[in-house]
Length: 596
Image (cartoon, rainbow, N blue to C red; front, top):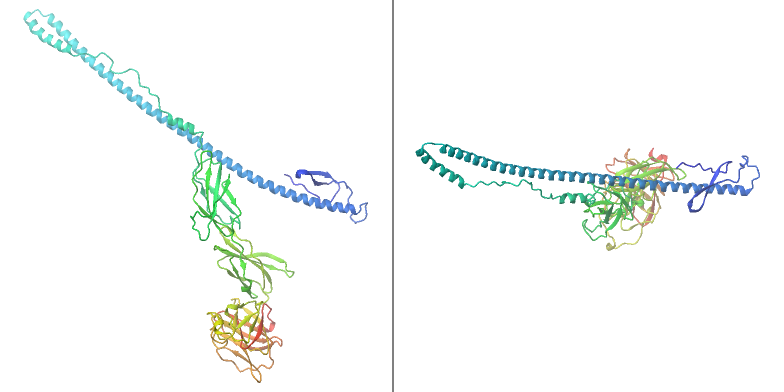
């Protein structure tokens, strides 16, 4: 089909498409042959002509879309015809080979019958000749004996001596009598006619009749599943024949393999699809489900045995990103998610793309493939915003994208680990403010586990494990006693923060005379006095320098710096030693003075 150029405006001499009945296309000349003025001046056109021009443009767009749909349908139909053509060609080839094989088999059988009959005639001829030769030899011997007796009798008859005659004639008579006793059989010893029985060609007849009978197909061979051959709800299945069978159609059977059902169980409902090609796309399936499939071939003679059963998998459902467990810093982001699938998946693919200042996507999508578990640490560029999504992958292919989350690398962002919180500590709905009530909890209400603080009313933060620079701030009230800092993940849960060698913290204590501040590690603090009570405290952690610094944010005042080479990753820690509250602010850019 040659493409038509459809003008978007009514130019002189152009034609526009209009759609008639039954979706046929007709070409009508445009009634308006006058071009609009390039200056927009009035050339005799009123508002109706402008309106008509818009209608023509809209109609052209509709017709163009319909033409594209028609082209797509025709391409699909042409592909289907090509598949049928190949199937017919394959069947013709198999039929031709089948006829040739039958022809060769008939010729071979007839040749075998000829050889057998020829050998039988040769044996019969040999027997007849031997019998006739034996009879001829016996006749010759009898003739020789009679000739000898005749000659002897003639000689005796010619004898003149009576005495010799009498003596010889008696013995001659005796010999003649003995010879006469032997009867000579003068009939032929064999029949001169050859035995010509009717040849048994029933098997040849059967073979000739079978030329017009197509044998039942042999069992097809279903192919193993190939990569990217499925969607969430469909499977593309292929099979083949190792013989030259003629097949009219195939029947593909499939059923789901349930979690608590053995693979060879017959309890699951079996579905069936009838096709003419050696492939089929099965639809309306469950996502990330395992299916058992087998196929049979059928022609006019019968149905083949079933193929061996094969297991196929549909594409998984999209994972669900756990935004409350994701963290980031200027160099990277740690993304965690749930599989969202009952059956295990092979791997995951994390995709991320940068966002512009106007919240639009810029650049290309980058991917991290073959992620084995439900989390991934992604290296990013500082000061950017990213859209991040995850796909689950199995042999059938990748799932759809999960819902995007937005990650900013302006500063360090983390959530509080509520499973580490002391029972007296409560966390706000947004996850960034902690409260210590003044009521005493009974021991029975304090459901503790190995990860929960038992003595210090504290909670840890889920800081991303990246050895770089991290900064966050804490907003506190001057009437609240608190401890803030960092600790190893395995810090003692029955100890106070700063009282051991696995935590570093700034402590605020209310005394009758003043506000006291301590910077504790291993239970020891330098003697420092802070004159202005900070209400917003900045914490700067620098792995490379091995420092942990505290600042009064409002005054941009340095309070104290721990010099420590952290052997392991540390986590932010927050504790309230009396009833009160504090709020964590993170995901913010570190001020210039924090890492001078």
